[in-house]
Image 1 (tube, rainbow, N blue to C red):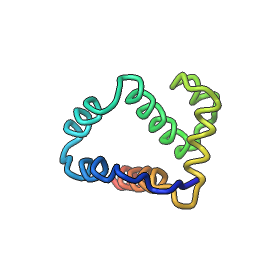
Image 2 (cartoon, rainbow, N blue to C red; image 1 turned 90 degrees about the vertical axis):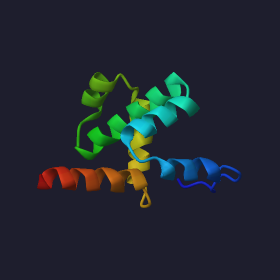
Image 3 (cartoon, helix red, strand yellow; image 1 turned 180 degrees about the vertical axis):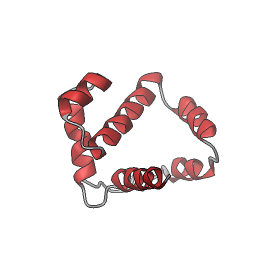
Image 4 (cartoon, one colour; image 1 turned 60 degrees about the vertical axis):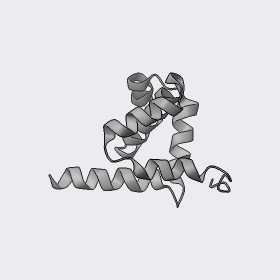
Length: 99
């Protein structure tokens, strides 16, 4: 599912690396994304968390309002061998389990 790295956009990725707090990240995303784009990213992240927690599609649909197509897309992303999102969520879950 990986695509070629988009050229001419490395400045955006470098900008993310400069952010130090969740508040800075939120404000930066508000600056560069529309409300609907940011909401869609938040929804997909929430869906990914629920999928990693082995929640079923109907429960995810009820809690997020997402369509089965969106949930399926997030599921495919998580299924990829090189899914950074899955790795991040699993590391977060492992840290939570230790606390």
